[in-house]
Image: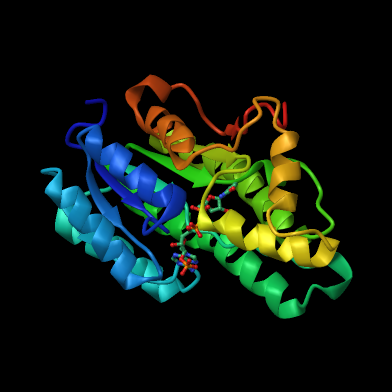
Length: 258
Ligand code: NAP
């Protein structure tokens, strides 16, 4: 029980990697506030956590809306009294060839993946400063480290997350708060189902082929699972990671080595 009596707040926790992190921290003894833009998914995960004997709260809302973000953080603090660990996990994927990428796609991708991390990170940090302690874990991607002709907005948004992680770590270290980021590679969630169908369309490949080719680039020869990411998330949230700060940690089977 590495997180006994800790209060965890996670965005985009209704499914995929976020859901797995929410359940994993609860297994380690944490109480968990679960955000998702889909209220029903957040509620379902909160229910699963309560069934494990932990306290949980569903806090639906959109991470791109400042007023909603402030309301959600206030709701979590009113319910649990504090936030010890925060996962800035909500994200969306974009897949369109660079020359066809619309302004709307660019804006929405940057809004959820970059601005959402800023807004939530700032609101949670203000609470953690009052506590004199905390851990913030953003979700970047190995996409932050490379280019992609079909995912220029997504990759730029994740580069922003890794950069913001360093700036937040510097700004918040004097307050006893660490800030790190997870950088998953190809992880089996519905995000990749969507990506595969889009890439197949643009590259004139049969469905499933883009995903297969991507997996062939993974030295360990398999897709990652949400549990692969959640195990690292639990470690970064635990006291074992107290001296890790400002880092973006790859979880990608060796696809990227920097
Ligand atoms: P997912 O299954 O689509 O889960 C993301 C969750 O975030 C969804 O429930 C989504 O709801 C929610 N969300 C989207 N926009 C939101 C908003 N504005 N406010 C609150 N919640 C919102 O994706 P995932 O694969 O678990 O991804 C989780 C994180 O890992 C993302 O940041 C992603 O970029 C990152 N990541 C994923 C992979 C991968 O291969 N899967 C690799 C690297 C990094 P909707 O579905 O309704 O939009």
